Every structure is written in C-alpha cells, then in structure tokens.
Length: 310
Image (cartoon, rainbow, N blue to C red):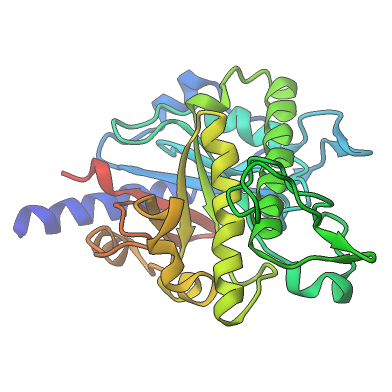
C-alpha cells in the first residue's frame, strides 16, 4: 500500500507539471516529445476540435494541417476525428495527428489512437432534417429481413427506423469518418494505417439517440455497424463512455452481439486516484477490460493506461 501511495504522489506531481505546459500550433518533433516525458507517468491525453486554434478544413476537404494547442509530455495521444457529431469533421485533425504520431507510446498504448463520435438519429429524422440516413442497406447487413438481400431505408420520403437501417447508419458514418482520417493523415504526412490503429467509439448522451426498449436495441445496432467497418479495416475497436450514459443509450444490449467483450475507456474520474480506481471496474461497459480511464486537469483530458500500471 505504501508503494502505491508513493506512486500516486509521483504520478500526480508529474501530471500536474505536464498539464501546465500546454503549447500552441505546430506539434513538437518526436525527439522533443521524448525529452519531456516522465518515465513514471503512464498517462496520455485526448484532444479534438475544442483544442483547434486554426482550421485546415474548407469546402469539404482538408486544405492544410490547421493548428492546435497540445498538452506537454503526453506518453500517447487519442485524437478525435469528428467535430462533435458523427457528421462533422475535426477542422485541425491533420495537426493533431502529427502531434500524436510524435509521441513515444507505452507498452500497452500505441502513440497514436483515434476516437470517433457516434449517434443514431433514426427516431428524429423529420424533426432535425437528418441528411445522412442511409437510402438502402448493404446486402451483407446482418439485420436485413432476408439474408443477402438489401432493403430500403426510406419509404415515401420518410426514413425507415429499424435495426437494419440503424446498423447501416453506423457503418456509413464510420466509413465517412475513416475517409477523413485517411485524408488528414496524408495531409499531415503521418504514415499510420488504420489497420494498425486503435479506434474508440465515443458514446455520449450529447449526441442524438433513440429511447425505449426498441430504441436501445437500434442504438446498439448502430454501434455494431460502426465497429464492423473499423474491424473490416483492421482496426482494434473499443468503447468510450460512462456507465450512466452507456446504460441510457444501450443498456444491456451491449453485453450481447458484436459489442460484447470490447475494451472500455471509462470517463468520469475526478482525479488520478479515482482514475486508478476506475481501472478495477468490473464488469466494464460490455464485459471486456478497462484499459483506459479519464479525468480532466487544467483544461486537458488526462488518460491513465490501466494496462501500464505496476
């Protein structure tokens, strides 16, 4: 116990020092990043559009890297590909990918990881004039009424709200987001293939979801569709949420189907000590392992690697 207390104190001091050193714009070189890293700290950071200071996005493409603030001394970086919803791009994604790609990583954490926004707006298509709902399902969609036969996701100009179309919505949004990553990585000069990358599905109540027993089933189907696209691309998929939000959006449906057993990144810790306690959460969101936990400090999200704790 004394050793753990000493470790926590050392980690707290190191993290406070790192979080205080936020810097602007062009990410540091890999060598500079390694010089700032404390060997005691199994902690990374996640950043996205809130940290953007300049846009590289115009007319539906990345025309430049953009610019961003970044935390000093992170061991690994998790970059949000979207700009808050599953249908919006992070305008400084190239700059943030370049930052994360310069980090040293940990035994249990790749230097560059991604997180993507998720949603399922099927129940509010007319209210919010959703334009990203699929027109038709893919023949390989596992929820089609007939195996191998595509089915319509609109009828008389109105979206069809069922499991198959929810799954297809998730797949299509993931496919678009993957294209953003590919384009941004090319602009940034980052030669990391999605097949070698961890992708976290960000599941939060701030995005649009369905409710009720059938709604939760359709929400799970949308997440399954997103996960399926990334798995097909060779990525390792995990889930980011809090237990409270996860239960509101998916409920027990996450313990069945293709989501079952995926790793969890748990948000909601208030400091390093509670983040470490979250690492021991059982069961996790889908019955898998908790590999990351998150808390906020001095304006940045800190992420503790549970797999790299002594």
